[in-house]
Length: 314
Image (cartoon, rainbow, N blue to C red):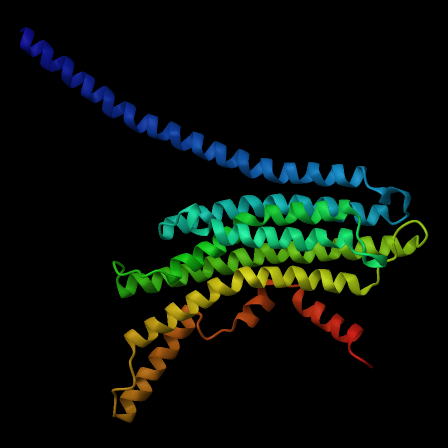
């Protein structure tokens, strides 16, 4: 009887452990989702508070166009917080596609961050009307720092695509490259929105300064074009390596699956070429980096048109 009782007790304990495991897993999953939701709300909230602080303490309050510039500045920092959270989530998506570590992208992200911050804040030390207030540099610096997770995703795509994926089948490699390109374009669109919004904010600041020439430095109107061009250039510097790595790996896959050089039959050559073209369309290797940048950076085409009008002789 004692043996039967021991067996019954052990069986009951096992059942209770099995029942406890799903509940514990569900609790951890709920906690993880709650933390992710809180992080998603916290970053935009911090961005809004930073923007509000910069706006309230700005010397632009004495200008009549302050009410035009202030909402744009707060919207810019809030959008930067949203892009920060978006970049963190896309990093999770990237790790789900293929293992990648933070230290794999630490050096390029740090390098582009130092370069961008130095370039942005250098305008505070320029002589003459091109000099910018240090507070304006703080606004842009916050946006740059918030975009670092998105830059890490782009460099993560570059790191994944350039590595040898010998354990992945050709079908698996096709799916991976398609997913990586889709992820890269999504991040480009998010960062492109920051470039557009920051350029609009800078344009509003310049209009505000010109409305009171004796109160604020009178920067030339071409400054906003240069600002938008530099922002687009920084995005291109991060996007182009990842695009190039995907392009090289995609073309290599096309060569492996549909070789043409050994064929002699014209019908077979045409069929192989058509299949190769279809695969290139699926992989996105038939597009150019310039086309992707024009699509992802909505401000790029208007900037080029305005630059041609302003800088080229009539």
